[in-house]
Image (tube, rainbow, N blue to C red; front, side):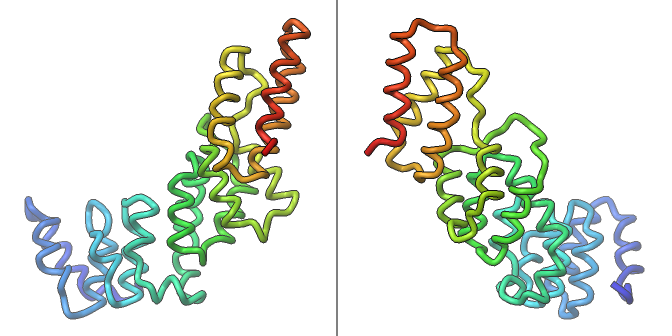
Length: 232
């Protein structure tokens, strides 16, 4: 924002006890897009959700970048012209990257919702899956991971495959009881899992069962159950 025409008005309002309420009353429907844009920048609790929907693309961009809403709610409200225009999308790229980093660090459920809503951001999502560090112990929900694979299937090279596998629940340190419980859960939902996800878990469980100190007959039973993951 090169010209902060309304900065004085905002500064004057900031002295009021109900600053944000009065600011909303004055700025949200202001006829000048510059006023609405500056309010999106200075509003104390982040831009108002309605501002992301603003008919002026630059107000929408400012509001998107300064919102405190979650990723899905932001992208749902974002002016459609911003979504469709690559030159405009660049102006929200840094904020979008942060949002997708958070989505990828979660269980993939909201990630899938966002990508179905704005497939134009698929490249950014893939980049974060591949290059984003794993910061926590939250792993991709198998069903959501399957949906994600379907959405990026035409980009599923070895690099992306490896990155997705890292986002799935690691089973190598699970006890016999824990591992079998999770295995049976996956078998129960396998018809809704993408073949790549099923095969990935089959490989994980093959390594897991070979590490267990169990009776040979018990191992055979487990190996038969593991095969059910990929059998029709």
